[in-house]
Image (cartoon, rainbow, N blue to C red; front, side, top):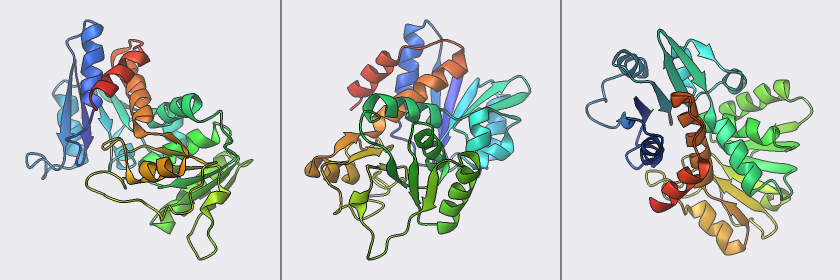
Length: 278
Protein backbone atom coordinates (compact mmCIF):
# COMPACT_ATOMS: atom_id res chain seq x y z
CA UNK A 1 0.00 0.00 0.00
CA UNK A 2 1.42 3.35 -1.08
CA UNK A 3 0.33 6.77 0.12
CA UNK A 4 2.00 10.18 -0.08
CA UNK A 5 2.08 13.78 1.07
CA UNK A 6 1.74 16.54 -1.53
CA UNK A 7 2.98 19.99 -0.58
CA UNK A 8 5.67 22.62 -0.91
CA UNK A 9 8.81 22.56 1.23
CA UNK A 10 7.89 19.36 3.06
CA UNK A 11 11.28 17.62 3.23
CA UNK A 12 11.29 17.75 7.06
CA UNK A 13 7.81 16.28 7.47
CA UNK A 14 7.47 13.71 10.28
CA UNK A 15 4.29 12.25 8.80
CA UNK A 16 5.91 9.48 6.71
CA UNK A 17 7.79 8.04 9.68
CA UNK A 18 4.66 7.95 11.86
CA UNK A 19 2.56 6.27 9.17
CA UNK A 20 5.19 3.71 8.22
CA UNK A 21 5.91 2.80 11.86
CA UNK A 22 2.21 2.08 12.45
CA UNK A 23 2.02 0.20 9.17
CA UNK A 24 4.80 -2.14 10.32
CA UNK A 25 3.04 -2.81 13.63
CA UNK A 26 -0.18 -3.58 11.74
CA UNK A 27 1.65 -6.04 9.46
CA UNK A 28 1.13 -3.96 6.33
CA UNK A 29 3.44 -3.51 3.36
CA UNK A 30 2.99 0.24 3.68
CA UNK A 31 5.02 3.07 2.14
CA UNK A 32 4.53 6.80 2.60
CA UNK A 33 6.23 9.04 0.02
CA UNK A 34 6.83 12.79 -0.17
CA UNK A 35 5.78 14.67 -3.31
CA UNK A 36 7.45 18.01 -2.71
CA UNK A 37 6.72 20.65 -5.34
CA UNK A 38 10.07 22.24 -4.46
CA UNK A 39 11.69 19.10 -5.86
CA UNK A 40 13.03 19.87 -9.37
CA UNK A 41 11.40 16.64 -10.57
CA UNK A 42 7.95 18.07 -9.76
CA UNK A 43 8.47 21.78 -10.43
CA UNK A 44 6.74 21.69 -13.81
CA UNK A 45 3.76 19.62 -12.65
CA UNK A 46 0.43 21.11 -11.56
CA UNK A 47 -1.52 19.75 -8.59
CA UNK A 48 -3.99 18.19 -11.03
CA UNK A 49 -1.17 16.35 -12.79
CA UNK A 50 0.40 15.14 -9.54
CA UNK A 51 -2.96 13.81 -8.33
CA UNK A 52 -3.65 12.15 -11.67
CA UNK A 53 -0.22 10.46 -11.68
CA UNK A 54 -0.61 9.25 -8.09
CA UNK A 55 -4.11 7.92 -8.69
CA UNK A 56 -3.12 6.24 -11.93
CA UNK A 57 -0.01 4.59 -10.53
CA UNK A 58 -1.79 2.75 -7.73
CA UNK A 59 -1.51 4.99 -4.68
CA UNK A 60 -4.22 4.38 -2.08
CA UNK A 61 -4.44 8.10 -1.34
CA UNK A 62 -2.58 11.27 -0.48
CA UNK A 63 -2.37 13.86 2.24
CA UNK A 64 -2.40 17.48 1.11
CA UNK A 65 -0.60 20.34 2.81
CA UNK A 66 0.43 23.97 2.21
CA UNK A 67 -0.36 25.55 -0.22
CA UNK A 68 -2.87 23.15 -1.82
CA UNK A 69 -5.56 22.45 0.81
CA UNK A 70 -8.15 24.71 -0.77
CA UNK A 71 -7.06 24.20 -4.37
CA UNK A 72 -7.45 20.42 -4.12
CA UNK A 73 -11.24 20.78 -3.78
CA UNK A 74 -11.42 21.39 -7.53
CA UNK A 75 -9.80 18.02 -8.26
CA UNK A 76 -11.88 15.56 -6.22
CA UNK A 77 -15.24 13.87 -6.71
CA UNK A 78 -16.78 13.49 -3.24
CA UNK A 79 -16.48 15.84 -0.24
CA UNK A 80 -17.22 14.65 3.27
CA UNK A 81 -19.33 16.85 5.56
CA UNK A 82 -16.37 18.62 7.18
CA UNK A 83 -14.79 19.43 3.82
CA UNK A 84 -18.06 20.85 2.55
CA UNK A 85 -18.23 23.21 5.52
CA UNK A 86 -14.54 24.11 5.62
CA UNK A 87 -13.86 24.43 1.91
CA UNK A 88 -10.48 22.73 2.26
CA UNK A 89 -9.18 19.16 2.42
CA UNK A 90 -5.97 17.55 3.59
CA UNK A 91 -6.69 13.90 2.81
CA UNK A 92 -7.78 12.33 -0.48
CA UNK A 93 -8.58 8.63 -0.73
CA UNK A 94 -8.56 7.02 -4.17
CA UNK A 95 -11.51 4.64 -4.54
CA UNK A 96 -11.40 3.04 -7.97
CA UNK A 97 -12.34 5.91 -10.30
CA UNK A 98 -13.32 8.37 -7.56
CA UNK A 99 -11.40 10.69 -5.26
CA UNK A 100 -12.89 11.15 -1.79
CA UNK A 101 -11.83 14.24 0.18
CA UNK A 102 -11.61 14.52 3.98
CA UNK A 103 -10.25 17.01 6.49
CA UNK A 104 -8.29 15.42 9.32
CA UNK A 105 -6.88 18.85 10.23
CA UNK A 106 -10.35 19.55 11.63
CA UNK A 107 -10.71 16.27 13.50
CA UNK A 108 -7.03 16.19 14.49
CA UNK A 109 -6.98 19.68 15.97
CA UNK A 110 -10.33 19.14 17.70
CA UNK A 111 -9.00 16.00 19.40
CA UNK A 112 -5.69 17.63 20.38
CA UNK A 113 -7.54 20.68 21.70
CA UNK A 114 -9.83 18.51 23.84
CA UNK A 115 -6.81 16.80 25.41
CA UNK A 116 -4.46 19.74 25.90
CA UNK A 117 -6.41 23.00 26.10
CA UNK A 118 -10.14 22.60 26.59
CA UNK A 119 -9.89 22.50 30.40
CA UNK A 120 -8.83 26.15 30.27
CA UNK A 121 -11.12 29.09 29.54
CA UNK A 122 -11.65 29.33 25.79
CA UNK A 123 -14.52 31.69 25.24
CA UNK A 124 -12.58 34.34 23.32
CA UNK A 125 -9.87 33.16 20.91
CA UNK A 126 -7.63 34.90 18.38
CA UNK A 127 -6.92 32.83 15.27
CA UNK A 128 -3.85 33.69 13.21
CA UNK A 129 -4.24 32.60 9.59
CA UNK A 130 -7.25 32.05 7.36
CA UNK A 131 -5.76 29.67 4.82
CA UNK A 132 -6.49 25.98 4.38
CA UNK A 133 -5.35 24.99 7.87
CA UNK A 134 -6.90 28.08 9.44
CA UNK A 135 -10.34 27.34 8.05
CA UNK A 136 -10.22 23.80 9.49
CA UNK A 137 -8.93 24.94 12.88
CA UNK A 138 -11.51 27.75 13.04
CA UNK A 139 -14.37 25.27 12.71
CA UNK A 140 -12.75 22.94 15.24
CA UNK A 141 -12.51 25.82 17.72
CA UNK A 142 -16.15 26.83 17.19
CA UNK A 143 -17.27 23.21 17.58
CA UNK A 144 -15.19 22.94 20.78
CA UNK A 145 -17.08 25.69 22.56
CA UNK A 146 -15.34 28.88 21.48
CA UNK A 147 -18.10 31.50 21.41
CA UNK A 148 -16.08 34.48 20.17
CA UNK A 149 -13.48 34.08 17.43
CA UNK A 150 -11.34 36.88 15.99
CA UNK A 151 -9.52 36.06 12.75
CA UNK A 152 -6.32 37.73 11.55
CA UNK A 153 -4.71 37.15 8.16
CA UNK A 154 -2.31 39.24 6.08
CA UNK A 155 -5.07 39.11 3.45
CA UNK A 156 -8.15 40.82 4.86
CA UNK A 157 -10.10 39.41 1.92
CA UNK A 158 -9.21 35.87 2.97
CA UNK A 159 -9.99 36.61 6.63
CA UNK A 160 -13.36 38.09 5.67
CA UNK A 161 -14.18 35.05 3.54
CA UNK A 162 -13.56 32.77 6.53
CA UNK A 163 -15.67 34.99 8.79
CA UNK A 164 -18.55 35.12 6.29
CA UNK A 165 -18.47 31.33 5.83
CA UNK A 166 -18.70 30.54 9.54
CA UNK A 167 -21.15 33.28 10.44
CA UNK A 168 -23.55 31.44 8.14
CA UNK A 169 -22.65 27.98 9.43
CA UNK A 170 -22.37 28.82 13.16
CA UNK A 171 -24.70 31.83 13.62
CA UNK A 172 -24.69 31.65 17.44
CA UNK A 173 -20.97 32.46 17.61
CA UNK A 174 -19.42 35.92 17.39
CA UNK A 175 -16.88 35.84 14.53
CA UNK A 176 -14.99 38.94 13.39
CA UNK A 177 -12.00 40.00 11.33
CA UNK A 178 -9.18 41.19 13.59
CA UNK A 179 -6.91 44.09 12.64
CA UNK A 180 -3.94 45.45 14.56
CA UNK A 181 -4.22 49.14 15.36
CA UNK A 182 -2.81 51.20 18.21
CA UNK A 183 -5.70 50.14 20.45
CA UNK A 184 -5.19 46.39 19.94
CA UNK A 185 -4.85 44.47 23.18
CA UNK A 186 -3.67 40.87 22.92
CA UNK A 187 -4.44 40.03 26.53
CA UNK A 188 -8.19 40.41 26.01
CA UNK A 189 -8.22 36.89 24.52
CA UNK A 190 -8.26 33.63 26.47
CA UNK A 191 -6.08 31.99 23.88
CA UNK A 192 -4.20 32.49 20.62
CA UNK A 193 -3.82 29.89 17.86
CA UNK A 194 -1.25 30.14 15.07
CA UNK A 195 -2.18 28.39 11.83
CA UNK A 196 0.14 30.41 9.58
CA UNK A 197 3.45 28.98 8.35
CA UNK A 198 5.27 31.63 10.42
CA UNK A 199 7.74 29.89 12.68
CA UNK A 200 8.81 27.30 10.11
CA UNK A 201 12.43 27.33 8.98
CA UNK A 202 11.41 28.92 5.68
CA UNK A 203 9.19 31.49 7.43
CA UNK A 204 11.08 32.68 10.53
CA UNK A 205 9.46 34.91 13.12
CA UNK A 206 5.88 35.38 14.28
CA UNK A 207 2.67 36.34 12.50
CA UNK A 208 2.01 39.17 15.00
CA UNK A 209 3.91 41.08 17.71
CA UNK A 210 3.84 38.97 20.88
CA UNK A 211 4.69 41.48 23.60
CA UNK A 212 1.08 41.46 24.86
CA UNK A 213 0.95 37.79 25.85
CA UNK A 214 0.13 37.23 29.52
CA UNK A 215 0.54 34.30 31.90
CA UNK A 216 -3.21 33.65 32.20
CA UNK A 217 -3.51 32.84 28.48
CA UNK A 218 -2.96 29.66 26.53
CA UNK A 219 -1.47 29.37 23.04
CA UNK A 220 -1.50 26.68 20.36
CA UNK A 221 0.64 26.32 17.26
CA UNK A 222 0.25 23.96 14.32
CA UNK A 223 3.86 24.38 13.12
CA UNK A 224 5.93 21.41 14.24
CA UNK A 225 9.26 21.81 12.50
CA UNK A 226 10.72 23.31 14.50
CA UNK A 227 8.62 22.22 17.46
CA UNK A 228 9.67 25.27 19.49
CA UNK A 229 8.66 28.25 17.37
CA UNK A 230 9.25 31.91 18.21
CA UNK A 231 5.56 32.05 19.13
CA UNK A 232 5.84 29.20 21.63
CA UNK A 233 9.17 30.39 22.99
CA UNK A 234 7.69 33.78 23.90
CA UNK A 235 4.64 32.08 25.40
CA UNK A 236 6.93 29.89 27.51
CA UNK A 237 8.90 32.92 28.68
CA UNK A 238 5.69 34.62 29.81
CA UNK A 239 4.32 31.46 31.43
CA UNK A 240 1.38 30.66 29.13
CA UNK A 241 0.03 27.15 28.81
CA UNK A 242 1.21 25.82 25.43
CA UNK A 243 0.13 23.23 22.86
CA UNK A 244 2.83 22.62 20.26
CA UNK A 245 2.20 21.62 16.67
CA UNK A 246 3.01 17.99 17.31
CA UNK A 247 -0.38 17.47 18.95
CA UNK A 248 -2.34 18.26 15.82
CA UNK A 249 0.23 16.51 13.62
CA UNK A 250 -0.22 13.27 15.55
CA UNK A 251 -4.00 13.21 15.58
CA UNK A 252 -4.49 14.27 11.97
CA UNK A 253 -2.09 11.46 11.04
CA UNK A 254 -4.03 8.94 13.14
CA UNK A 255 -7.25 9.85 11.32
CA UNK A 256 -5.59 9.78 7.90
CA UNK A 257 -4.08 6.34 8.54
CA UNK A 258 -7.53 5.01 9.37
CA UNK A 259 -8.98 6.49 6.18
CA UNK A 260 -6.22 5.03 4.01
CA UNK A 261 -6.16 1.54 5.55
CA UNK A 262 -9.55 0.98 7.18
CA UNK A 263 -7.65 -0.03 10.34
CA UNK A 264 -8.04 1.72 13.72
CA UNK A 265 -4.49 2.74 14.71
CA UNK A 266 -3.19 3.31 18.24
CA UNK A 267 -2.67 7.03 18.87
CA UNK A 268 -0.11 6.41 21.60
CA UNK A 269 2.21 4.74 19.09
CA UNK A 270 1.99 7.80 16.83
CA UNK A 271 2.80 10.00 19.84
CA UNK A 272 5.80 7.86 20.80
CA UNK A 273 7.10 7.84 17.25
CA UNK A 274 6.73 11.60 16.93
CA UNK A 275 8.58 12.15 20.22
CA UNK A 276 11.44 9.91 19.09
CA UNK A 277 11.82 11.95 15.90
CA UNK A 278 12.60 15.18 17.77
